Amino acid sequence: FSVADRVWSYMYSTANQSQDGTNFSQQGTPLAGFGVGLPLSRLYARYLGGSLHLLSLPGIGTRAYLYLK
Image (cartoon, rainbow, N blue to C red; front, side, top):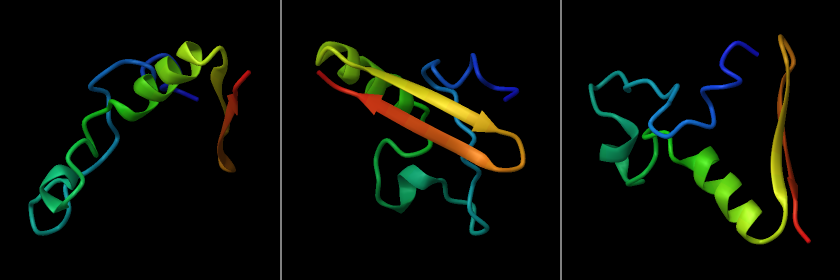
């Protein structure tokens, strides 16, 4: 998981531009591709007394675990 530390940083994104040159935010979802999803989700989870953890297995995929109290 080579980007483990960066996924929790704001503005980090792996989203690419589409073939017509537009990015995700121009296609309808205003925050898509800006790298705020995971950091905000973790903040909300902590605010609600829980946590958000990621488990990544190379070649298999990534799982997100959300725990709330």
